[in-house]
Image (cartoon, rainbow, N blue to C red; front, top):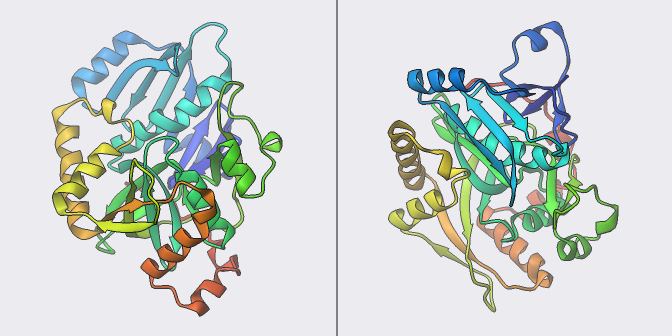
Length: 325
């Protein structure tokens, strides 16, 4: 059993997650974690009763091409997994850290997007897109320029009533890269840790400069499906922005009950009104990444002095303040 910290939560887990930041293991953490992740037999009678009394309970079949087992996510506090006999842990972990953690964060009130985020200036730039769209590649390239990673692939956003703004909560300091992206960014793909034996991507740790705190949302971009000859940024109407937020919601198929669906639509509508959302049209070649980064720096309004300051990342090595949502 270990204690981890991710998304502003203390997570007690029977399952090892090398990609998560370690939390301190003490009596208080052990007795009162925010989230428990565990292997165990699923009591379907208890699940049925839980679902009758609370909309914040979902269960189903673990799949990644083939059935892997069953899962139960309850009340924003519990993820229980019952793998089929012979299924290796390496195939289960990515599903827990993908759709299942997304469902749990949704239960805790977050708007959870299929997106990656970095800190540009004093705000989060969020990049939405489907798998393989280039989110991890872009945030890794930005990180190499000194911009701290906030989260990759699963971006959890919440409204802070005290600060009266939308905030992105730090996830964990890893990205997942395809072979061509890893090579272009200067990494040996073969030396990177495997996700599992059949995965096309591999893990890359980006602990240096990892922004372990909540960051106000600056701008949100959705990746265009098609590549173009020149990078340009297309402002979206409110309606188009809402549609993109809905399209890039993580684990949207798990938003089953009417109350969750209503809350989700309200969040997307409000976020689209209060934060600039644009569509990012990009050149296919990775050689154009520096041009894209320059355009984003202009978008962030960073001066030459501010850009140079990103080379000193110590100011971002802040302690994660645990928050309740």
